[in-house]
Image (cartoon, rainbow, N blue to C red; front, top):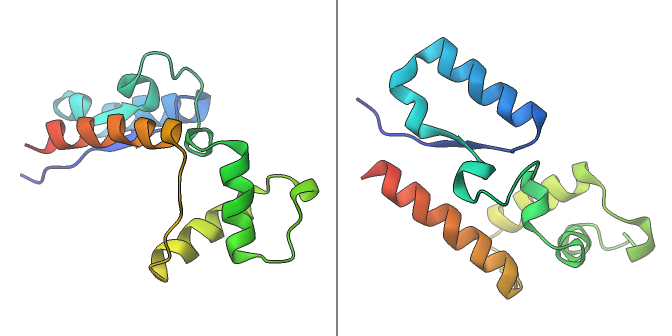
Length: 115
């Protein structure tokens, strides 16, 4: 028996995926396949990138794509690449308190579910 937790966005795509996985795998995994709304009931229609502020998203992109200007706005593919780059290269990034609190909630749920 492997312990796992999956957390999906709480938008339509995420909730559809949650339902599909529970149907395919079975009701035994229902408590381990969550959406962000299961973490915090106020997080309706929240996507993973919404966990970060707009400023953080742009700064993360700029950490990887130095020619990206603020007025270029948020570009999801660049944001995802920037997250990977920060992680792979062990770079640090200073998040604001609101973002850190969101992740503390997520990590708390993860720890509870894998015990």
